[in-house]
Image (tube, rainbow, N blue to C red; front, side, top):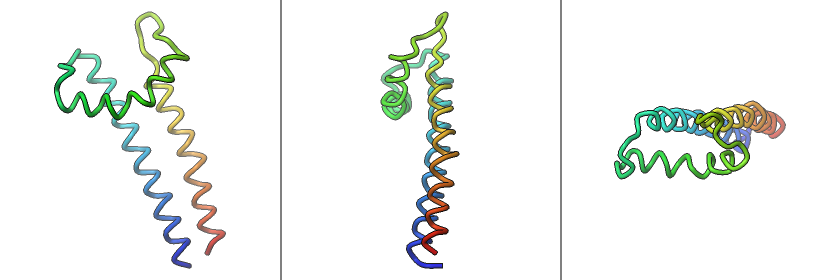
Length: 98
């Protein structure tokens, strides 16, 4: 196995872990939003800064329904799709490079 294919495999694994971590950040942000936290708390600010760039465009397309925000669910679904499509493609690329 060549060094380049090993680098590509490491990239695929890293992307998979980062997307999984981002799913958890979205879930934590959704749970925190249920308790109406202090918006100036550092943890809340970091989570909002990490999730808002992804959730804001989804909220424009899918406004809250009966007061419920479904944008985290849609974002997680999209991330799962990316994981299911991109990660295997990168693994295949690594296989072709070996």
